[in-house]
Image (cartoon, rainbow, N blue to C red; front, side, top):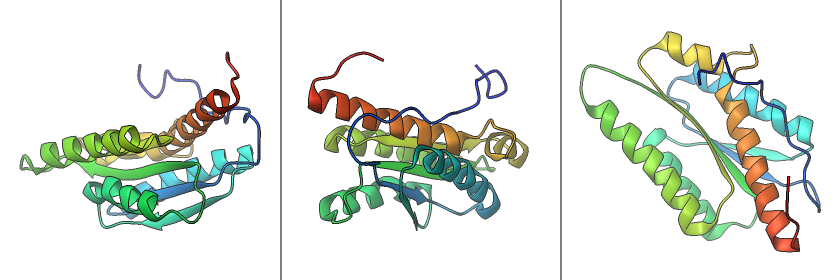
Length: 166
């Protein structure tokens, strides 16, 4: 399914408790693209009533290690994380290594620590493809990552209180 075919992201109704605090961690190498992703994510979080913080890291490769460092020292009570960044294919195979390592790192840190994590890391061939996924037209991968994070928080909350279903 392409982004154009997908429904526009909407925040889910949150399950029980206080609004969840979320950390948006971003790799702003392509600053304008990542700003578009962040705008999509923050719109969803605001609509859901979820407070959030934003933190920059050097690049896509550093997203997962930074989340791991924060989880190990978390004094802010983050219920979830949204990772944002963009890697555009260049002339070497560096792209393949960074994309694979960054995505595997995000999955691993999420699994190892039971995190609600929305991944909004674009891995694209061109700036045009990145803009198609970071624009304000409603098909924004940052917004989709925020929705995924909130839905994962709902899964955790439902499990914690023994709720089941939609």
